Length: 639
Image (cartoon, rainbow, N blue to C red):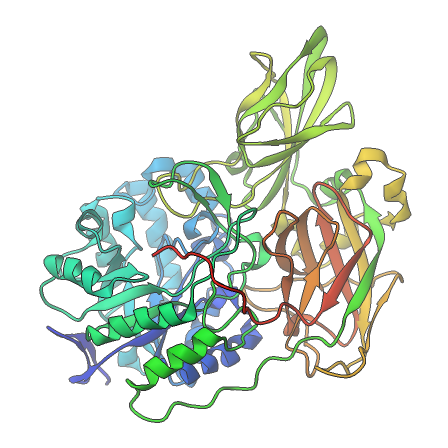
């Protein structure tokens, strides 16, 4: 039986000192058919270990509806086949720039500020979840012949709270569920974070992007003995919608990695390969020194400026990291696997059919509710998606300002069926006053829930009320349209599509809706030569469906590992290819190209859906080989 332990100065495997050279790769951000390639890339870079979080909300979006926890087990099996060890961070909170920090909306909606504390009701649902999930980890521990060597208790808790009772209970729960490998915590290298997030008897690790010597000095003040480890070496950063992209100079990042290793420490490169926030699961942040100011939604790409880019390709950072890590390898590093090949393209896909947003809501929406005040997304059970609120302005009355207080996050507003404006949290009043009587509709979208800081778990929707002058408008009808409603096999077949030309004659209603089209791949598409892909305006066949996290029913196309999809002229919404949700697009940038996993594509007819929520462009999308490897001058990265 293999034994992995935490010694006074190093990790030990069967008594022999080992250094962990780990990299973060989240199984839920990479298509399952691509795990093997991405793990091979990590091994070729010089890593001996991989780390992953587990998003509770992906696996249990509604209470009791547990989906495919076996995906974690399958990933860990793939890690073992790749000859790597594994670090598992099951949360229940994970941050990770993921929707709500991985906590389900039914949890934060019910418990509010009681989450991540000793509250008995919150602990009860966490325990039920862990007892469902953890067998996937327990049976794959290194002592049982598996790859798992470390498991984390909570996540960066010192950046949030100081409930030592909760942390010790959670560590005890992991042990009760059968976790026998060493447990650890990870926090920023600051006194208040380490005192708030550490647990007596558990290894404490630090998270930072530079300044290893100073960071480890702080860690040693709190933990005089035990192996040093940077559990999150931030080698890049993530992007927000409407902001400039953030890149990190490869030479500088390689120097920071070298400094960690020169300290004799172990490391987990965050991220080694970032992947993609498929399915609208991207989170959000709040600006400011204490993360409680303006709202900053995260883009669909989670490229992270990582050494292995979103498309699975080696970057200059990869090559420099490989040079650093090679000096610490026990033998020659394995060769790189073949570089992924993009769709030859380009191809223009004509979107031949359209259904208005109201018709889509009628076909796929939840039942409409009526109440005195607007219900939140949480009260309606909507995690990702939008809600239509309808309310009447009594009359007759003169024109007054109309707006929404506590709006999260963005609303397209119609007055008597005419587009009246777009509201946001910062700009919550229509540009023109509204007279009564009038019927008002607000189509509100959540752009991603906050995943870090004191605003974690804040509700979405119209969280205050609809105001006409100072008067609240009561008697609100609300109906949710969850992104999950598009996932069921054949669900979109219930949508009453008509010819796309009808959108042009539908007035403001034609600016939004669900657009559908097809394109054909004949099976000979490769990295070079003429494109063998064509668009078509023929009637689509049966719609595809996204399956369990990271999987798809589609068989893929030989010789095509990925494609890129762009929507020039479109504004904001979501895209599906063969029923697989690629994620959100938004014209504010900086992201312009959505990543299409090759296994999602099919030989023959492929189907595209575009759900436009604000202003549609010409009824077509463009497919091609995808974004090139990043070579632009870097910007500033958060240290």
